[in-house]
Image (tube, rainbow, N blue to C red; front, side, top):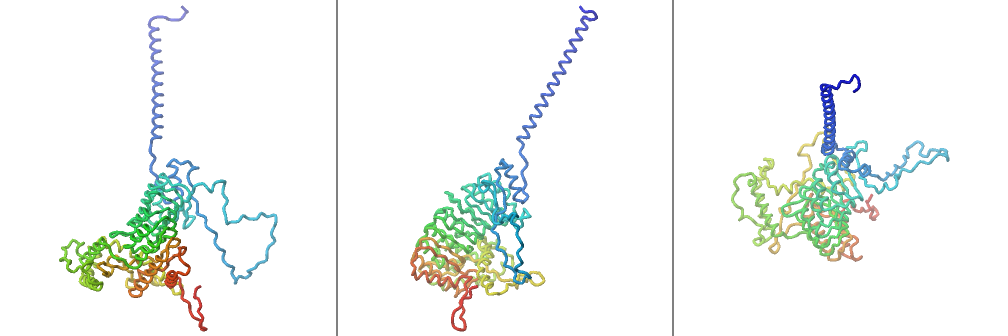
Length: 553
């Protein structure tokens, strides 16, 4: 045993206790480190599983779209760029002849100086032209919140991209035009987009072209509550199936699209069946002004249906029943106000086809009903429209659109003659009194127009709200031309006998590129009649020598 070492039992016991204490501290330290590691691991897992807060769009399309794409998981290189849509350079103004020196002396050009690059094109990197991008037009390029038009061309819009549009499009306050060309839309993506359109406050123009969809759900874009004014569906391979859905969206006996004034269905696959369906959808529609069915497969049969639509046609049984209901509500304005209904007017009803002797007899009955309900109608107007029917309101809501658009030709004619237009405000800047403002003609339900009884059927005047019809590049022959000629002659006669500022009738009719003989008499008569109805037409004036001189500018 070494000297100085105490090996007593007490010392051995103390060493054992010290060893245990030291081991306990090591164990406690290890447990603390393990707990800290598990806590940090749980925190990292929580960060991964934590759902980020939803992004609130600011109305600035470029940053909003980029951030939404990033949150959707797209890499920076996969996010489509938002670029300003290229515009063709404008024509330089002519030189001012009053300038002091219109032809200044040419300065010596330094040959060594580099010639500036032309400004008529923009150079891009390799393959950058084929990279997906979104083209926009803005009111002011310095203000990102003034995006007015969005163009997407040549790349597929999938469900994820539609979800991004659903978030950012409604926040763009000035957006009024959306143009999708060859974007690979499907039935689902089109319906999702159609649900977004009503949420955009100022969206009026929709162009969806080069997107053939087998299900053909085009009617979902133009429902009764749609705010779209101009709709173009060219090159979508629309067949008679799609035309039938569009027909129902235009109007039925009880419903009507109240805002759509221009519809372009050219370059599709619509035959006579689809043309007949569209004509049926325009029987009760007095809002649509411009219709194009160019480059389809319409023959004489389809053209004859449009001739019947534009002239006059008999009411079906369903339309006669709806007419009776409207006349009943018109003669009983207190029905909708909760008051007790007046006595039955069944004995005064004159619109039963089997009991009507003549059209004049029916008109007298209608005038009698109108006269008997005149006082009640005036009282109804004083009550701010209380007690009106929803069916009648359907036609009243589109009155301003019809009146404003139907007077385009008259406005253009006055402008070309050099007449000055008056403002709706007086010299002091205040609004004109109500008595001095121009009268707005209220859109009328076609079922309430005057009718004529022929061989037990009720006939009403055809659609005179359409001012532009394009049937060029079809398969229309001589029989179809004769039917359309009769319709044009009927509209001109009716306009002279009973002029209506809201129902001008056809002003432009395109029938070119059809299999028509060069010496077709019907085609020449149509051309002569439509020439005088064109709003830009100017009659030829005779000179003092007796020769005719054109007034065209």
